[in-house]
Image (cartoon, rainbow, N blue to C red; front, side, top):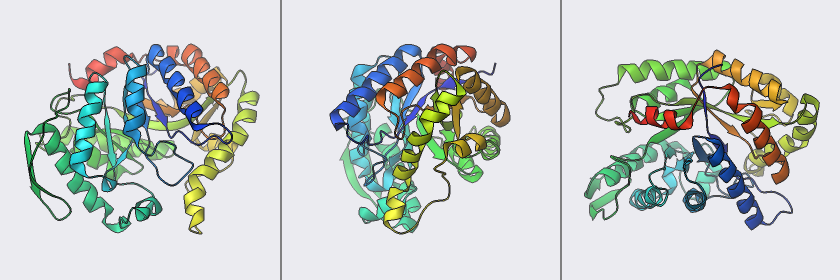
Length: 356
């Protein structure tokens, strides 16, 4: 079996008819179970103005996760940096790192939806420039006692940082990508990476990441200087049931709701994104979703790891129209009958990732 460590990726989608406080409580219960089972980290997406995300302020939910778990690491995947004052976000990151006992991970990005950014008056074509400058300010704020930055987007005049993170010099940074070029960017900056897309695309990203990581080991601009062996992972929707037929039957309507949620904002502006199908069987056949009995899920994860070379997998467990009960049953089967067949160990992995 491959040496693979598991995290969890999440959107916290709206469940029709379920009170939002109940959704939050169910997710926290799920993460308590994941914590006990030895998952490495919880990665929470940030989205706005869409039923895809009921956690548009990830830090607030992560503060609750920090109090309900003991070993599980956690972080946004990703903070949409163009939407933040970077000093304010850096201060929030410091608080979360201490509240979690030094278990915070920092995912960063510019955002993939031009419509979400537009609602905050951020031009999509300028968002990468804003992202780069914001990241520079955030890193300085996490590491320095006083921040001065006079850039095109941000002007900071000697701001005294009274807060600093528990982890030194900063919590680990992560980057999400669907292209080899951006994977190379993550490696040059010394960040962990989670890639999306079909297996061949993930392999291309992993290969570029590993090659660039080796070539840039001495770069002074690396954001995780404490990391010697990075995570290069993949994301997948996963659903486990007692049989393949039952898994597909229950996942089929749930996946259509996920598709509606992820397309909602695009459709509001009379367009769509072609990266997603509403047919779970198509998603399953193309590898975007791993659906089936424990034996099938084990086999497909083995194949994904062999095809791509990943050392980390962050499955979405609760997604679309899955009820809390369905997600918890799937998680229990995954914990009991899938995870033990892979050699990743969360505590050993944590030490390896930190270079200890």
